Length: 235
Length: 253
Ligand code: HEM
Ligand code: SF4
Ligand code: FES
Image (cartoon, rainbow over all chains, first blue to last red; front, top):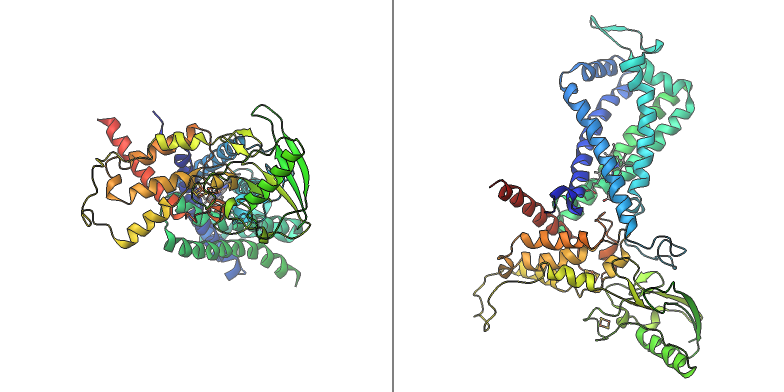
């Protein structure tokens, strides 16, 4: 008997659900990060980061995020590989056809989700080494304790801004990561709803607009923070 | 009109195949693309060469047999037309036109441009039918179907099984075809006997035959000669999810 999650639609539903779950996290994460923009002393951001690190909920959400990302990545690899198999890929000058497909009626992002995803995951590894790893395990001189309203906490603000100020290339890296994420979601948002069957001729237009606005907001939001920190340190 | 045709020639399923280039001096703007292929074949026969094998039947856009990739697009340039409806006005004098078969392992080449699309028939056998008594025609309004529903079902029923969606898709997925066939019945009372089981059976067959999964890129819809919409794929997904739940329930009994 065919199992639901081994069918092509079943697998796509797992992609969609894990993708939407990761999006929820990205929203929370961006909200916390945006505190950097609103408070130059870093107190606001430090308090938010401290809350995120100590709330009991994080003990549940953190492993779920890791599992979600891993599942999303593994199924993406599986379906991308399987989808290549059935076409005579090695054939022509332009993929499987000799002549370039003049109008595919599709966006570049939608055809290159795996490449965009790979950029995201490479970025994520570097990003985790930059901050998460230091805050959780190895520590860093910049993290030395601050006291806000009588509460002791790590100076996450110093660690984050320190990276963007002291290593300017990291800003370029974070901007590339934000663009890749934006493009991934430019297609991903509407696609996730379509996969779940929550679309029709009318809703497709609405979902497309939501997807474009949402992906632009997220990409801009994540790109602006390192740019802002770097530029502020230079003027 | 003088044209250069670069055509895929393949003697049989096992042959490696290659492109051959032909010059054609007597093309005219009044021709359809298939008439151009006829002119090429007449020339080849006169020269004692093997004519190009291609499929065609109705030549009016309803049978779906005239499958070919023209300049990298299924059924050539233009919206919502089949190759037999493609007019030579779409090309310029002196142009080189590349003609290829659909390329996917689920549609193996039989000869030249002719591919074996029996995989579509196998998908139809898995669920593309209704188990209702046919008998004589029922009175009108026996089954009440709203105009919107009837229109949507008709859009789906317009699918001619040509395979352009598979040819256009980067994943060689047959989702648009399966969605059209599932939607057509899912929207009408006559299809209720099989219910969501139809979606399950047809999709399982599609997977088994090696077609890819759907990335929702929309290439299929852009190249479909009948303008079958991606909204039918959303409906297929809904039907399939319902079938999944039903199965999970039934298996526990
Ligand atoms: C924060 C990280 C990520 C988020 C928020 C995210 C989100 C999404 C969403 C919402 C979709 C649409 C699902 C659908 O079509 O139903 C999607 C699709 C996809 N994602 Fe991600 N993704 C992320 C990371 C990754 C990574 C690391 C990879 C792998 C290298 C990846 C590969 C893909 C692929 C290949 C698809 C398209 C699947 C298909 O072709 O049908 N994603 N993603
Ligand atoms: S859905 Fe469109 S492109 Fe696909 S087989 Fe049917 S008519 Fe052809
Ligand atoms: S020959 Fe029938 S659709 Fe073209």
